[in-house]
Length: 394
Image (cartoon, rainbow, N blue to C red; front, side):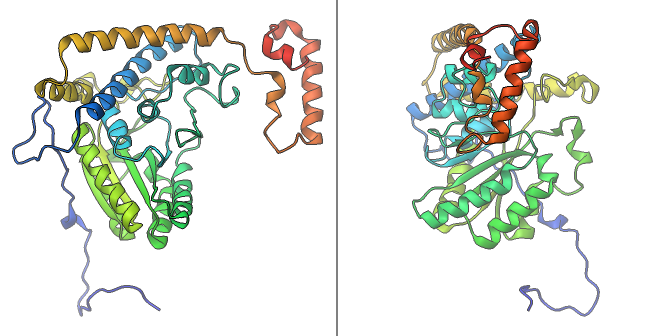
């Protein structure tokens, strides 16, 4: 049985789909004014300032924590720099109870929802107050109360998981959806295609949000795919799709708000491709000078999404230079002071290595744990005494 609805032709007819080039949705220019013909979005002052604070906080956090990594105080870090509008603008368009399944560069989503500076730092330093109990490397955040699924390292695993979770939301019928974030590099993984196909077939309320930042680590987009970006792939799955300027906070917010409405009201999966740029290195282990030029980076710095929103706020007289100075100073002080507290907290108790793995600690894990304690007692000089180890009985 066929499900296609194509017309019949009697000569070979081929197409590469190039005639279906997608436009890019924009509202806000870099000078802070709207494009001619663009309608002023329905965004009130309080929400706009909440968005802006989250953007600035994310930038400050990224700058300080990369510096901490370079000082040897932190093992690893990944920045959101340059992509704040894509992440925070889309999160702000959701209901706070909608599920977020992030990749690894969406700390701004947590900041917008109210993840505290202490909570960020506890995870980054893996101390005794880390929700993940120090089991993960830095930036692998998670928060049940903020509906933010814990990040995992393998690329694209969260995309099919988002489809499955959204299917559950559809069955629950409580009017919620799931958004999943990923880069254009992750869209080259098989999980991306499996997830979109399942979502389209089962009609689930999920938003696939692709941050097309130009590079999959060092591989430029031009070497990843020959088509017009990621967005046209939605046609193959009969899915709603939009391409948006990822550095335009207003356009991202409006596009995601409309996508959420379709997802929740019509159980319609949506693909959003946000065109942006990773101004920072891929991670603290990466040196982007080996694969892109300073000239290219500087051209994108002129499109800074935070500066663009700041100018819009100034133009509307919702913000001023004194407000900006006070915010920057308070956030820098808050991040620095919180970091100093977090890195002094002891690590999690040793027994947390095996607790919560299963409902009850299995005999095999218990045996491994005893061997670990024996090892630490045998080589105490290699394991400095800490409150966490003391609690574990080593």
